[in-house]
Amino acid sequence: MIMKPRYLFPSDYMADPAAHVFNGKLYIYPSHDRECDNVFDDDGGHFQMRDYHVLSFDDIENGPVTDHGVILDQDQVDWVEKQMWDSDVVEKNGKYYLVFSAKDYNGEFHLGVAIADKPEGPFVAQEHPIRGAYSIDPCVFKDDDGQVYCYYGGLWGGQLQWHVPLQAPFAPIALPDGEPAPRGYADIGHASDKKTELYAPADAPALTSFVARMSDDVLQFTEAPRPVTIIDADGQPLKASDPHRFFEASWMHKYNGKYYFSYSTGDSHLLCYAIGDNPYGPFTYKGVMLDPVVGWTTHHCVVEFKGQWYLLYHDCVPSNDITHLRSLKVQRLFYNEDGTIEKVVNE
Ligand code: FUB
Image (cartoon, rainbow, N blue to C red; front, side, top):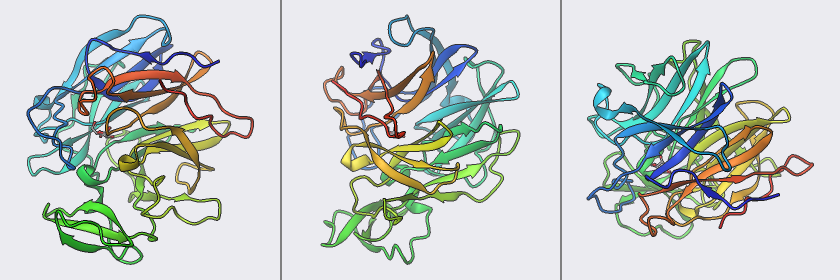
């Protein structure tokens, strides 16, 4: 039975939920939105978050929320200048690892790690970001064998397009910023000079999220990141112009032995998912999990708690559509017998 979606933390603006069950409680690690003077831009300059909180629940549907307060502030991380964006937490050998995305003093996004003895922190950050980890929106997934994988990446303001080899088959063209997309091309964001816009042929493979297995101490990648390829029913990679292609907000969960990679499509504002047989994929595109919400961004996680599956997400209804002031929400999620996900009903 569906329920009425619940706003989880009405007293403040929070977004980008990552939820896990630790010691029988549900912990949510969100981004902490705040007012800022920056105007809306394609670079996400209006998302000026500076710290992280953790929330916990014994009962996600009706129970009270506990806000454990600030677990990490940008001033506590040497390499970070600003914009503490999406994060996630994984437990390994009794320690908790917060993997987060933030901008350094050169304006580049990286992924960092902070460590705690308890799920509610406090977390102590490493001095440097993870080597070779760029862009945004980390998801740290622990498989049944204890191996931890980090999925990450986000286009446009998330800078993923700065870091992928943009040669054939992408064959992008570059035009001055502000030029409209030429016919037959898809906009894949600005180049690192911030003056040049990149376009890929509409039928070129879409840019992808990336995944890397993490070291046993969860501080580094143990391998070169691999693309997370999403293929259609014919085995072809989704195309750059497909409204269901990956944009940001990677999430991995496992259901009945299958690997479910879900993500936001950014400028087409959908949450979609794809299913694979192992953590690296490829993942076969299966459908839309959530239609567009109020607000530009959409971002989620999927978690099982006390025998029920949930989609946690955000929207901007409480802030009257101020796109950088988002509110956390939860709704039940259901699987069909064939393992596909029923689209979640939002309202
Ligand atoms: O919260 C800032 C950015 O907005 C996230 O990194 C994206 O996924 C989008 O939700």
